[in-house]
Length: 151
Ligand SMILES: [Zn+2]
Image (cartoon, rainbow, N blue to C red; front, side):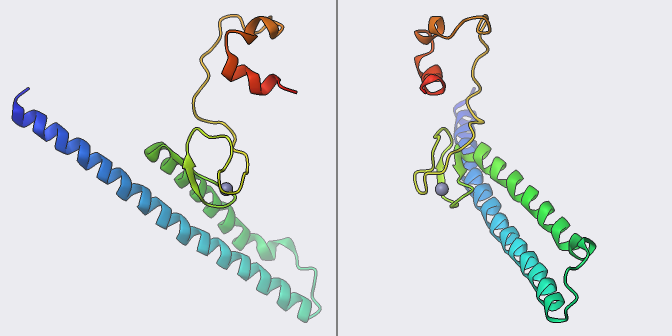
């Protein structure tokens, strides 16, 4: 590899890092506008309920709410997808309760304390974990096991 090729590789890596940051920011902005739209849909539902209550036509058939509810479901799925992508790109994940960014491997949000499901760090498959009663394993996997088995 020539010097120039190495130089190009280095530039490409720096460029990828910058691209990652741009992409993460783009996804975050996308999510905040999606969240705004979710809130608008909630408001639309609220208006329907209010108008129905005012005119004495409550309860409304569920079909009246089908469009906004469908839209909310769709948007929430898209938000979820973006959060996953952000986590993949940045080694950070976004707390669903409070919106803070925290390192991808933590179990609790440092801002609000809510618990994350652990989806990263796949645990390597054990050869004969099934028929052990737990005690034989305790010494082998102190970190992975200790939290599940503390009662
Ligand atoms: Zn939080």
